Length: 241
Image (cartoon, rainbow, N blue to C red; front, side):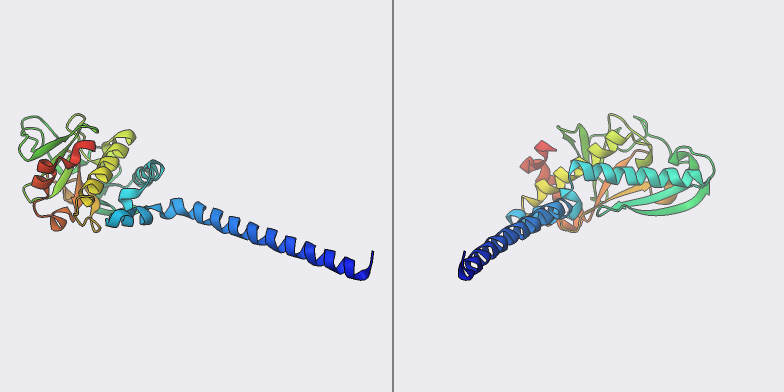
């Protein structure tokens, strides 16, 4: 084999290796993108079809479960130090819940309602249970959408009433967050700008709770759409919620 032939073979092998390397790099970038796409998929969903969703509304079931678990772990960790909060404001805007303890702390775990003397839910005294005015049943989740006196959007479980978020069962917590996701997306698809809407829970009187029945608050909703309840009700937007 002549020297020129060897050089040609080496050059050909070099070309093949370069092509293979380029192919591997392309696949690596693609897999790297795919591995991070789950982490940022809500950004893609948030701009799909020109809509503008808040980040939390596009989290998958696994992420919603992780958020719920973080809230439960946070509360349990307070008990480990003998300092259960008597009031909490919980906000969910992204993957990391925000906690604002309020009031005092107690070494004993009991209902948030008991700490500050807030009346527990009953059919005769609970503002959510004694009347159906300004309420819309959500058929899939069997939860209820409530238009509060201050025009806030609330989601309530009237079938299994509890005192506050931290007293709910995990499966019910997940379902409530998922229902909020579906509702916000349904409104976004109808042109309502829900990009600044987030979830908030008030737990205990010192945490701002005024009705002794767990309710999810969609903060920023009334600012996004003043006549939100009528539009949802008349447009049948919540049929899949």
